[in-house]
Image (cartoon, rainbow, N blue to C red):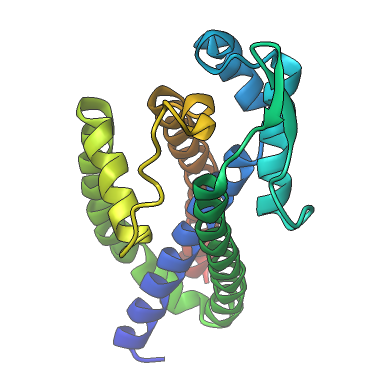
Length: 233
């Protein structure tokens, strides 16, 4: 295999594996019901929502089940300040339709990225001598770019999370403002305040770094062993 093709395939494999790890980290944390219970306690959401912990968990369970195709709707009745009512209004229902479409597309991308990484890994395994020679260069180049991007993203999240979150919604929900919820009428924004989402994004990034970093430590170790065998032979 020509060097340019080896480098291209390695870069593609690094990209698809990074994408898989990132999306896996998103789903792993976003669908963790216990996380929301912890946030309910941490931020005193019983005061801002008027929901008991049981009803809050019931509402979140309904949302997460809907996103995972375990429910067809987000209809759920709860008690708010002693009065029984439907938790989510039509605007919130319409917004969750958009969120579910995005989640389904992200799930497909994650699966494709994972399968593509496996195929690339199989191809590169049969060109071990080329991988040993060019992987360190590709690894350093790719991760210099990734490190710069991660530092910029982390700085934006820490210093101005609202701008980051607004930009995210403009990118992934173009052409509508259903995500602009009103705390006076829309209980979803009370249940899921900005601080909660900031905690969630940080957890996603930490999970991503652990999975992605550990996997590449293993790959570098394996590549080092191969390089020593190449020298001996």
